[in-house]
Image 1 (cartoon, rainbow, N blue to C red):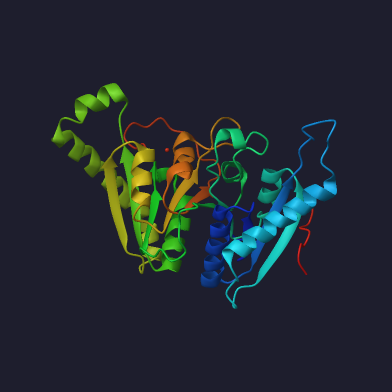
Image 2 (image 1 turned 45 degrees about the vertical axis):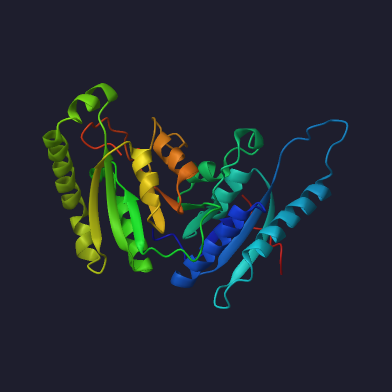
Length: 311
């Protein structure tokens, strides 16, 4: 946390979702100070045809057009927000990850294109979220900067390993002056869940135990953030479905990026990937260091310096 500054890095590609990412980043900078660095990376890919290679100058010109299109779609920045634009060429995910290494956050338009359109570049928002050392915010094309529900949702799978996530969530809620909903979704393996879900007493017992564990886990943050109104919500549901449903009422939804494998592999879990594809509000993926994967049936939820493109 101490190595992060207040600047926000935005990766853009000329789409309406990129324009929304810029608008989100500007609002973040207006609340917290710092500048907005708008970055477009021209993919460093081999020519698709040996007979008609694309000249590098044409690639860079197309990249500059995409950068300018994103800025034009976003409209002019607020006067109090410093904004800089940058054009790079190389591998998109590593360069955006490096560009945001010390930033407050990296912001991207939600990459919801069909797989056939991502064969060369992959899913950028998922790729950066899986590798970044700072939070990554994925902003859907359908989101509006005027949305203001004053609700922030954080999905907690296992409270004992949610320190970085809860720290970020309470800070975001405080900065937004919003109510913080701490959401935990639990569901047993299908065969057992079908048997137990029919017993209201069993469901209530499990929910009550989860709420008590959540209450104990968030006690330090309640104490350090007395101005944040907190709601604990435990639901019997599949995690991704519960989180996407909760995103309908939220200004922002926070998830933790857990470590998978030994050593930790650079990828997201299935719950995070599903939420990134279907959530209705911006999703903030928070990195957590040395967070083990636990099989717990009680608690289951899921470069070079920047080249300035403008003077």
